[in-house]
Image 1 (cartoon, one colour):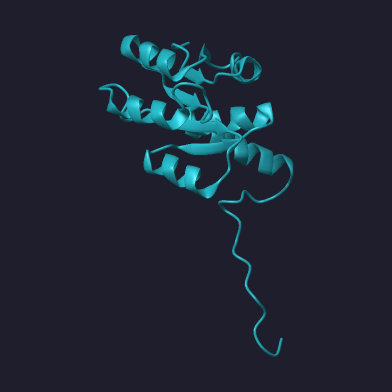
Image 2: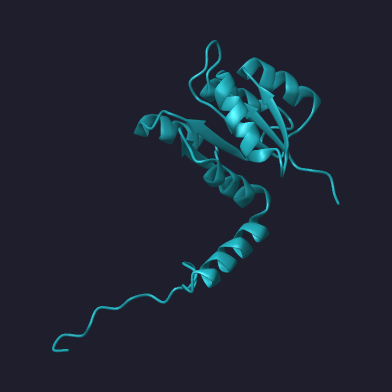
Length: 155
């Protein structure tokens, strides 16, 4: 078996770090840090395969942290999923401009988080899982479902 993929989780709330780690640790190597500064220090010595980043943090918020990560030689192309309670449009747009992969609102279901992480780190497995789930439910997969057409006039 190959090396486990690394997920860096950045959040200043201990319970959020714990819940996120519990949701992912069976499948990935999870590194938790409680500040943007610590995330940057980690990034200077290693490169995660994915970053889960909270926006609202003391000292350096998630947007500032993401801007600094993007300036690092090993940080320009790392996929980032924002995990946050902030849902205002301006924040979503600002993080999108910084090249995030996804935006997930707290509180989240652990299975949903795992599914989104797999979608980034194991896209082929995630697509296969969707096909299996659709087959088990005896439904066509959403990407293969035929388009519905309106009946013609007079029908």
